[in-house]
Image (cartoon, rainbow, N blue to C red; front, side, top):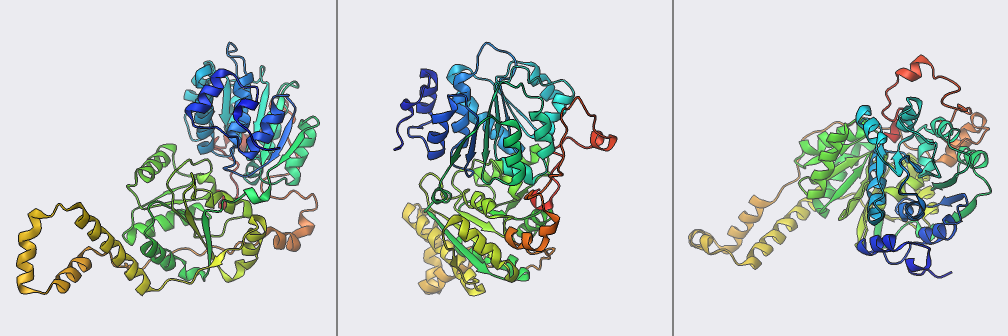
Length: 497
């Protein structure tokens, strides 16, 4: 069925007005497929990637169907990270602004008491991470009595982060009469079990694989040893001179070390990962958006839900944990019709991950040679020449003409210009740095072959322990569980930090 205008769906004038204000005219494939079913209040399973327009896909029917006069939450949206919770709240508030829809974002590493006060006020929609949502349920500060809509956004990512038991506990206490919408890039066995247990005859929607990556992102890989990664990264930065770039590392330690090393070499870099306070993350993101830092270094989880325009280059310093994470990473660039570049560092033992990524994206990556030191110097020289040309074109040089003439009395013009280029050029810094080696990432297929006897249940990944709490009121958590921090506790795997 060809995609049409949003007018084809049963949307109120207030929502159409919001869509017009947001310049949303034509639904994306996932929005079209979801909206065609969601208004029937049928349960829905959507297999779709990050960046496909999922928030509006479930947000529009929710904003349309909630009762404004009701004070208790009518929709609960579970997401894997606090950044995504904030982003979803912002997006739904924008969609529902002319209907005066109120949404709250609830997540760890934020004051519990402030959230308690917010939840006591009128909220139509609550967006949150599973650990903190469960905390509020257990303490009685969040009521699901009037819930009509339940959304699991990026369900497979929440599985990887170990949230499966929390999700099941929350679902066990949702009213029986409600609509469930589940969005996931992949469908591992634990997610299928959730669907079987908590959903009723769900409709299935699958976004085609060809829509997973955009054509305006150039994708390269570098076949490189671990010890050469950092020098290669800095040379690429010198040659390419990106306007805004993100470097992805697999662990919190890696992000911290990379950030420190880049600053040591003369770049301005900030890192974001799960151990940073929300205030520090927001400062780093603000600096990045303003262009006051050169590079943002991030883990996969910290980058979830980031809405940053203008990113020109993505550097996968470490291979992502799976092909879906790769798609999410490179999706930070090439937005709004712009072009982007993505470079992935592949160590000799990670060739299988390269093949897995290419099979998922249905696109071959081009091999890029390791840049040389001379190429890095030439790249920085070109930056200087471009700056000089810009200054010349601005024609605001009268104050400097006398000094230039005096120089030319003693030296020829080529020597003077060469000296200016040398003075302005940032030459590659050779300050020694030391990064802790990371173990190579092995593709899931090879991992399964090596440990199939340990995964007979087909669980597919982190955090699933094969049991669940039937109700947050039926079974108290152990003292160790109760004493855990509520800051999205179940982020167990270091590469998910």
